[in-house]
Structures are given as structure tokens and as C-alpha cells.
Amino acid sequence: MDYDDFTRVLEEFADKVANKVKAAAPAPAGTDGQELMTAKEVRAMIGVTDKTLHVWDKTGFLPRVRIGGVVRYRRADVERVAQVKGR
Image 1 (cartoon, rainbow, N blue to C red):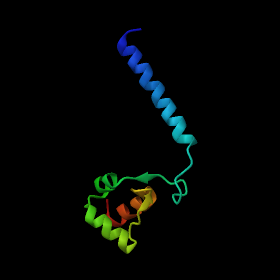
Image 2: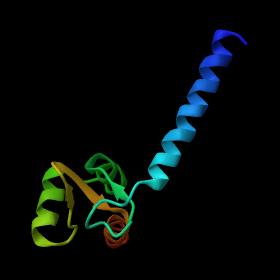
Image 3: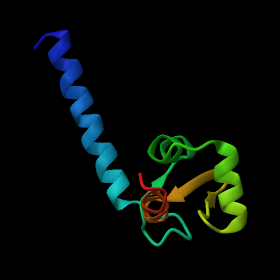
């Protein structure tokens, strides 16, 4: 086994471990097990600015979820908004 083979096997092992840990971890409070998206992912999907996301949160059009100091958006909410915007 050469270095490249060893690196590949090690990366595959790390991916498997990470997937098992992720699957075993409880969903963050307030998410009901729903998939969450970052603001960057939402901006790319819908094509809006951070300021628009902030306004949408304040008006309740696209609420955000805070986990500690991190902001996320529920995928189901983002998909609903994308349909409304025709994206």
C-alpha cells in the first residue's frame, strides 16, 4: 500500500465515522429534525442578499433558527419561499 492508497482509505474511514456521528446526533433544539441551511446556501438558492434575509426574518416570511450564535434556515421554509419567488 502506497501513500495515496493509505490517504484514500483514511479519508473514507473518516467520512464513515463522521456520517455515523451525524446520524447518531440529536437534532438541534427547535428544528424538529428538519434539515438546516446556511445563509450562503439560501442566498445561492433564491438569489437574495443578507439584508433581504434579515427583513424576511423580521417579517416572518422566512424565519431563521439560532443555534448558539449560529443562524440557519429550515430547508422546508426555504423551498416554500423559492416556490413563491418562482425559483
